[in-house]
Structures are given as C-alpha cells and as structure tokens.
Image (tube, rainbow, N blue to C red):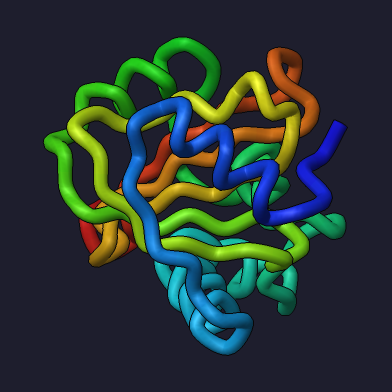
Amino acid sequence: MPIQKPDQFERFMQSQDVSFDREDPETTEAIARKWKQHFASVVKKQTGVWIHNKFRWHGFSGGFEQHMSGDKALKAYLYQWPAKFLVFNESLKFGYTCRAQSYPDFSPLCDDIYVAHHNMKWTMVFTHEQPGEGPYFAVGSTAW
C-alpha cells in the first residue's frame, strides 16, 4: 500500500537510522525536475515527454534509459559511498534531504520511491510493482 502521509515515511526512515530534513513542495518539485534532466533525457528525446506511461520509472522498465534492475541494482545502490541523498515519491507528496551511514532499502514500502545522490551521480528507484518490476539503479546521464 502506497505511503499516503509523510509521517509514515518518516517513521520508516527513523527505523532505518536515516536523518532527514523535509523539503517544502517547491523544493521537492525542483529536485524531481533535476532528477528528470539526469535520468529521463532519453525518454524525453524519444517520446517528447519526460514521464513515459504515467510513472518516472517506466523510463527504465520501458528500456529507454540505461540501468540495472533487481538484485543487481540493489547491490550497486547499497555499494555506493555514503553521502547526502535526496528522496521523493512519485506523486511528489514528500521530498527529503537525507544522511545515513548506509543507504536504506525502501522495498518493504511497496511504493514508488526515488533516491538520488545529492548531485545526481546515481539514482535508485523502488517501485510498487517489486519484485516483478524493479528496483532500478542508474548512473546520471553525464556519466555514461
């Protein structure tokens, strides 16, 4: 069941030892725009829209953007050096700037959660359709 309220998400992050600052709606939208520029540029180029088939992560499942998926994606994500990271959900009801000693696995939430390194070096996307679709890990378009 998707997370409906930020406090539900915040309780989960606290249980994962993640420290966080909640972003206002404008900042959350700015983070999502920056995410699209780094991780949906091929979708935009090939389809004319930034979001394919209603979900940002369909750029990965639809084969537009280079990525890893499943266990390989999760391992690549968990292997990343700890740094400040950004988190938002598909509907942009919440967005956060976070810090942790290790990156949290948001799979148990069964929601569309986007995690990105603070400078968009990489992203990890957890989906509501896991394990059949996702999770997805990608490196920013400037790194390919």
